[in-house]
Image (cartoon, rainbow, N blue to C red; front, side):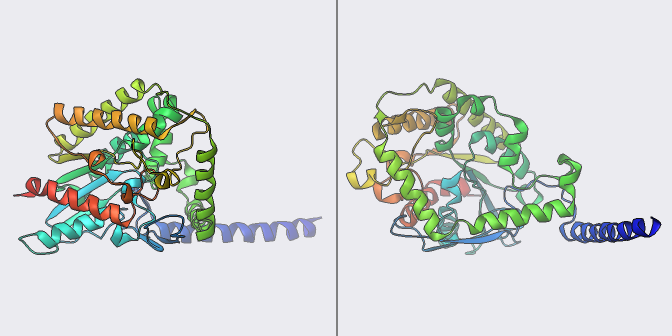
Length: 370
């Protein structure tokens, strides 16, 4: 009996010791984290894209994130003027190669036109797909405390699309959000102190990173193209209405968040700059552009393009109203946009990103003077 028990316990004890050794090794590798990161520092990946489906984008879109989790260059001592940018996927520009994103083009434009050295401006891209102003309030509060960002000059926000989407598709979740769920979607990495014990372990962090890397591999060229084709087909075939949805509760919440963003920036001595959300939706949209749209609601009536345009116009007007009331700068991209800026409803192609960067560069130069 003892011999049989010994044969069972020895392998189990050996397995336990191995697990402990693996955990210790992984814990040393990952270390202890006490900081918020919107994106995991030093994360890198790339997408191969079908440019016949996504018109005007990069055939290969490489993304790399700095030591503070920005899709941007690493901050160095040469950067005398820092600009932080928050937004959703229209800021992230995930299907554009890194040097084609509007934030990177903006940085290059500012450095090229600078009377000082040609490498002193830094523009940090903290855009994250699906994030709305609920997320940006959290992100602004945490990220601007980072030692490298305390002397940030401007904070730019390209917002509105996701707030509109959430107002139509899930108002209650948007207005009465769960703080913990919100935090998990605003930050890819949160401090260990806010995690349950098992999620602080090196083993958990390793499995989570492995799962994320595996999911990235599923976004291959054909699957992404097929996904866009399917959603566009759904939208074209769906029955649509011109009736305006009820937006007031969402608009009120949106304006409250904008006030919060302004207060956060001013409390830390930074200048906020708001961009109205440009979209492909327009009253005179061409038939060709109509085929590129992929706004499809699962939990709400689908809307005609003219109605979507009117909804976005209301959110942009709300942003302008808040900016004026608080005497802060806004740049109206909504009324200056062109149809050939986009590969779908709101995401910029290479030309759109370049034009947006040029407009912003011109408009913010007076704010950057010493």
